[in-house]
Image (cartoon, rainbow, N blue to C red; front, side):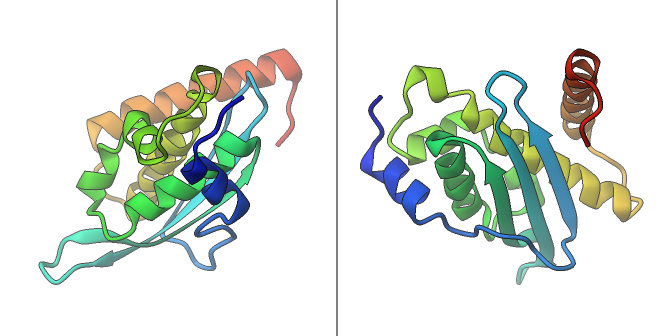
Amino acid sequence: MFYSKKVLSHFKNPKNYGRMNNPSGIGEVGNPVCGDMMTLYIKVGKNKKGEEIISDVKFQTFGCTAAIAVSSAATETLKGKTLEEAQILTGRKVIDSLGGLPTIKKHCSMLAIDALSEAIYDYFKENNRPIPKRLQVKHKAVIKEEELIKKKFGESK
């Protein structure tokens, strides 16, 4: 399997790896196909214009080379982005920033996107803020996948 130099660099020296104290939002997701799991932590602050931005981001990923590299690359992309900009980040953009991924590993990019969506959803929910429709839709999809995993493999959390 071929990985680009960027993928291997992010895998060997992941950026923003670890747990965050007092995060503004937490997103936890897993992939039932390959078993990868990710927790993404965001800290929300404000930029000079007063817009809410992701001022810090960290991740913990249990998974393969691609899952860890994607997690690292996604967090690098997110720092300083407004919450609106962060919500439109795609797996394709993360893959492109890494110089590509083998086809069989492209699903790893969605792990980071789903964890990000869940972290932003958690932030809005914890602050009693209206949750944007696109986050509600993504959240329902993540919950549905969790229910399928629990049904098939039993409760594990």
